[in-house]
Image (cartoon, rainbow, N blue to C red; front, side, top):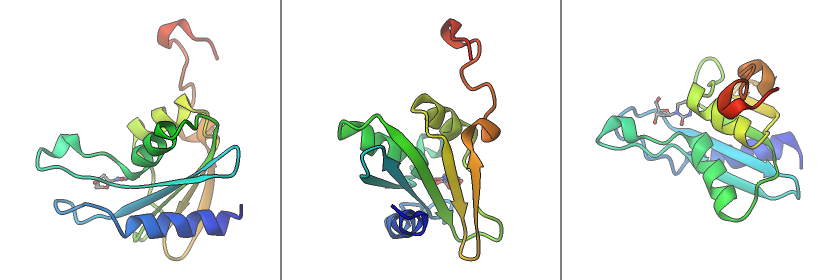
Length: 130
Ligand code: THU
C-alpha cells in the first residue's frame, strides 16, 4: 500500500464529514497489518463534547471489523498547516500500536512516529511499564 493511496482514502472519507458546527471537515484512513484500509470522518453533535474525531471513527471501524493489528494512519484536512490529532486520539492510537502517522493538507504530508506525538503513552497506567 502506497502512502499516497492511503492519503487519498482519507480525502475520500473526508467528503462524508458531519461537521455542521465547526465546518471543519477531517478525513482519516487506517492501514491494517494485512493490508486492509478503514476510513473515518469527524462526526459532530449538537452537544459539542460528543463529537468524535475522524481518527477514532477509523479506528473504531477497524476494530468493529475484527482488526486489531493496525499499522499506520493518515489524517487530512484543508488547512494551512497539516492537521494534528488531538490528545485523545493520540492515546487511542497508542492503544493499538499505530506507530506511523501521516498528517496532510493539500500541499504537503508530514510523517510522525506516535512515540513523538505522545511520549510515555502507557507509563504508569494500570501499572504498565514502558
Ligand atoms: N477533528 C478531527 O476529526 N481530527 C483532528 O485531528 C482534529 C479535529 C475534528 C473534531 C471537530 O469535529 C473538528 O475537527 C474541529 O475540531
